[in-house]
Length: 81
Image 1 (cartoon, rainbow, N blue to C red):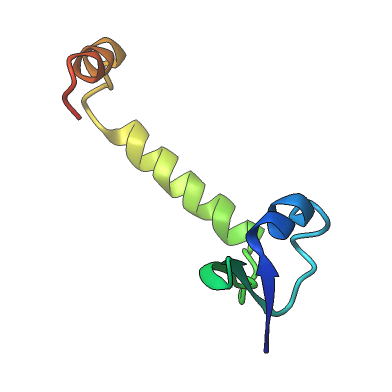
Image 2: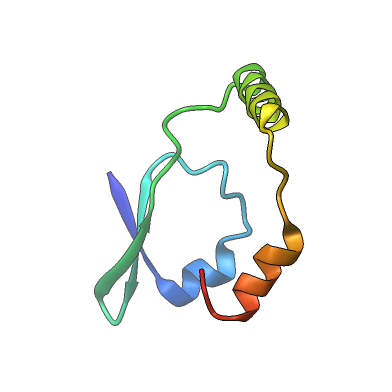
């Protein structure tokens, strides 16, 4: 089941309690759908997330090269990705 909601109304009431909705919300503008909010079907396991972060940090620490911030900023400023 889903509920239609005007885009203006959604932007005004999004802060109500976004974690509590359990059904799909379709946002409309002038009667046409422009987006939808879908409830999160799964919860994030904090222990798994911390373990993954630990693995990422360990792998990053084992790299022989260091990240060159000055080069990254120079690339950004020159217009390259």
